[in-house]
Structures are given as C-alpha cells and as structure tokens.
Image 1 (cartoon, protein in one colour):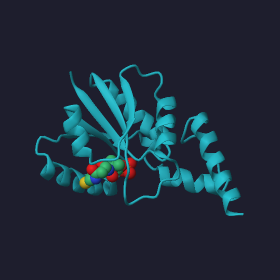
Image 2 (image 1 turned 180 degrees about the vertical axis):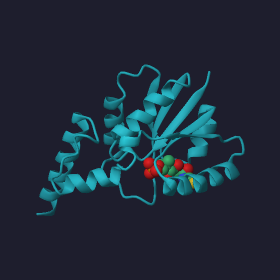
Image 3 (image 1 turned 120 degrees about the vertical axis):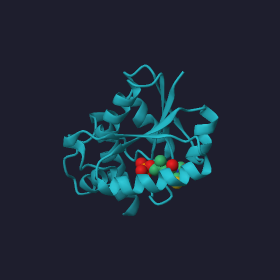
Image 4 (image 1 turned 90 degrees about the horizontal axis):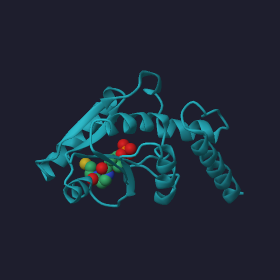
Length: 165
Ligand code: PNS
C-alpha cells in the first residue's frame, strides 16, 4: 500500500493544485492531501475552509483523502507510514525553496522521500498569492480556480472589506 502525501497551505486550492493531486493519485494507492500551516504566510482562509475547498475540488478522485494537520510534515509522514511527499514545481525559485525544505525534512527523518512533479505549463505562473491579489482588485480568477472556490474567494474578499469599514 503506497501512500503519498500532498501537503500545502492551499490558500486557496487552485487548478494547479488540482492538477498535481490528480496526477499523483494515479501513481499511488492513496493520496492524502494535507492542509498545513506555512508560518511564513498569513492565511486568508481557516484550515476548515481550506479542507472544504480541497474536498470540493477533489471529490471525483476516489483514492484521495483530505485532512488538516498542525504539525511538522515529517511527523505526519511517520504517522501515515507514507512512501513519499509530492510537491509541484513551477520554477527555479520553487526548486530552491523545495530543496531547503527537503534538506530539513531529511535531516529530521532520513527515510523521508519527496517527488517533484512539474506543473502544467499554462498554470506554471499562477500561485495562491496571485489569485488573492487578483481577487482583491476584483479581477477574473476563473481560469485559476474552480467556480466553487472562485465564489469562496470573492466572498472572503468582500467579508474582509466589510469588516474593515
Ligand atoms: O503551499 P506551501 O505554503 O508551499 O506549503 C508549505 C508547507 C505547508 C508544506 C510547509 O510549510 C510545511 O511542511 N509545513 C508544516 C510544518 C513543517 O514541517 N515545517 C518544516 C518544513 S522544513
């Protein structure tokens, strides 16, 4: 039984994330999509909201489970007896960041394995930060996320604006 973990902050879950999840689910028995916290980023959505988004995006893939976890990735890896972590790679700058994370995770847990999947070329330059920036200014994010996520992002932007008035 080969379990892969696809971890991320998924704030929000994008078409790029969906593509990586779909492709990795094809090469393992079970894919655990883990909504986690990146302490370098301030999330727009709560962990519960991010789990709901990921579940909606991945509802048609039978061997996917979505969880949220506030722990080290290596602790989750150990707990699930995972075979590998999957991460999408968009650019050279992603590679540098991923190489650092991989080095730290391997020092903490030498059995840790990571698989990098190149992102779909047309989605290679979108990111959750860009999606939030475009949505903040009322731009069109319909080619970056599914309609249900688009609605949640626009609602969150509006709610945040109302909160500030
Ligand atoms: O989507 P992101 O923000 O690039 O995902 C980064 C994430 C959440 C996978 C990473 O920050 C993480 O693994 N967080 C859990 C805590 C942890 O293990 N940190 C040490 C990584 S060196």
